[in-house]
Length: 333
Image 1: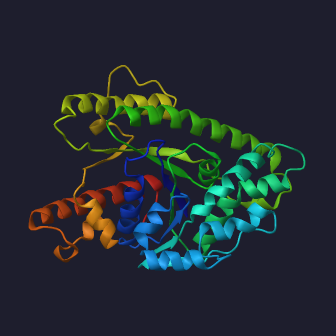
Image 2: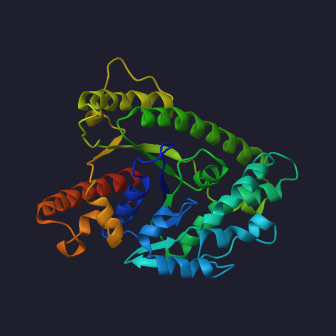
Image 3: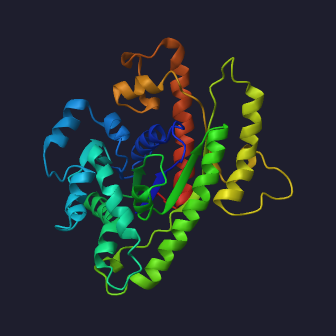
């Protein structure tokens, strides 16, 4: 099983929409996929499930049907992670929904991570690795090939704990100053977390029950560029210049490498996984229908002029699915 996350320190670059559509395109290829909603805003849960079903799950107090319910015994120091009860949302695709109360776990995670290098650190390790254990329990339950985690756009303790359960990180970016600054923030932070956790694993895991958990390095797999939406008050030339800066910024801040003697356009950059067209008019329709963009039909509310856009979207996500499977080393045959 390979665990990946689409992560950005910048909100509004489509990470949740991307995770939702990629989960569906991979499941449609016969890949067994589990999605974990580690975002307290529960955005991806609200796309997968209609409000009555989501509220029904939430009202089941102490439920093992949400991320928060499964982690609550650990947060309270009253037990270990519960075996999750997954929702099957499509053939070969399962979801463990989120809950807004997950934000209450943030402070506990922050406090305990600082204690992971102490001599008596079993509680600290249990808390810090609880999201990792939960992801493994979820994957094992359905023999998943890929685990996809949806995170909020923060660099807090909750996202750090989630990343400790990930093998690869994909960074969606948009050609704007906020996304470039997001790369500058996220890249060094991910490297620091990776170094800190490597030290913990070397010095703090001896004899711990969590020692058997498979290590995850949350290494950068690449980035995806979200195409801008042209507007009269946002000059295209300015966006084009920022777009061309992305490869160098990614190398410098995420990979900690020199950008090279000459600038490389993202079209020719090996680290660029995809260019995502801006499906602005289709996204709200898809979310209302709770379907991937590429499966929309006229019955879902798209106009005749959008049919070709849906077909192009299918081709685009097919290519993204192929690229991800290749980069992750997953062979379906």
